[in-house]
Amino acid sequence: MSNQLSLSTAAARQLATTTKSVPQMQGVTPRWLLRRLPWVETTGATYRVNRRTTFAVGDGRLSFTITGSDVQVIPAELTELPPLHGFDDPDVLQALAGRFRREDVEPGQVITEFGSRVDEVVLIAHGRATKSGVGPYGAGTDLGTLADGDYLGTELFTEPPEHLWEYTTRASTSCIVLKLSRNEFSELVDRSERLRTHLEDVRSRPRPAQNKSGEAAIDVASGHAGEDDLPGTYVDYDPAPREYELSVAQTVLRVRTRVADLYNDPMDQTEQQLRLTIEALRERQEHELINNREFGLLHNADYQQRIYTRTGPPTPDDFDELLTRRRKPRLLLAHPRAIAAFGRECTRRKVYPETTSIDGKTVQAWRGVPLLPSDKIPITSNNTTSVLVLRTGADDEGVIGLHQTGLPDEYEPGLNVRFLGISEKAIISYLVSTYYSVAVLVPDALGVLENVELGR
Image (tube, rainbow, N blue to C red; front, side, top):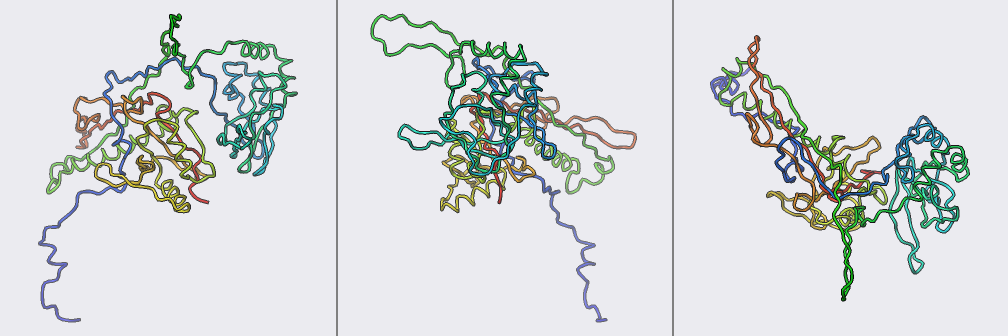
């Protein structure tokens, strides 16, 4: 063993003051949604969205039960089909659901053919299909993509037997479809007086005057030159507007009095505990704004504003369709892996997305709309996700965040820290709460690109 000639660094550290960082937290993300949403003061903890009257026709999606190879539509879900909207006889719906028969469709196979008779209702339980029509000069026209939960041929319920398919539907992946033949349906109608009466009422019901968005029309005259009688009109309001109540994320922060009293140099222990707790609450807040089933963006996007990818991965074509369906799109929100998948598709096509600057940070953009990452958007078990597009701001009838400021013991806007007391075990408790929600003022303010494949 060599003789030591000077004091070692390990021993010297016993007399040195350590330079240290504040506590770090790996779970902190940019939280772009919280930063880019315009926040509206919500007094009374409730925000009411008043709209013009919209005529609902049951245009949602269907759900299915899958047990092994047996696939069945949930009977109550059949009321999402427009002609059955409002029909509430569970026995008849059960009988109708039992008449659908499963059929497996291979990629490229035709499901419905333009010009042929509509003799069956088709429900897509799984897979993706494309609709195409015939243009004025005989060329094919792309009419969109269908996927899980969509349906075809509901004209069979109300139109005469001579009614023809106005488009061709072709499977782009392997599909599982459920089909109901006209004969099976007619047999059930003959047996059920309630169903027969309901469909007769649907056929005879006058179609309400409405605009292309489904809102009650406002009669206006134009192009006249003389003393023509002008139409009288009024703007009808939704009699049951939606109300958003503020939600809450809370936790109780506990700090030992000994720690708070003795270990506050050079950093205040309570302050650091509170800082990291607030970071966790803000992360949960953004997660809820996206995923909450009551008000979250993913679950509250209108079905008419949801589209599917054309081929699976997110392509420039998909993003273009997502943007052009609404005015003034302000931001795209996607999981980082979805952004990477979009980048690969752009590279494959030799297209290079632009960049833009937000809050001094450089981010990707598409057609001038920032493409912002959020790991709160879920990835499903089959490796697919969604991409959101938002128009924001109350002035533009967009998406807005809701909060209330001026709370008792407020620490940050919409967040307060309340002292709960000291227990017999000398533990100080603080209740940390944040109140929030998000509202979509009109349906086209929010769009979703669904079934986005992240890799093959």
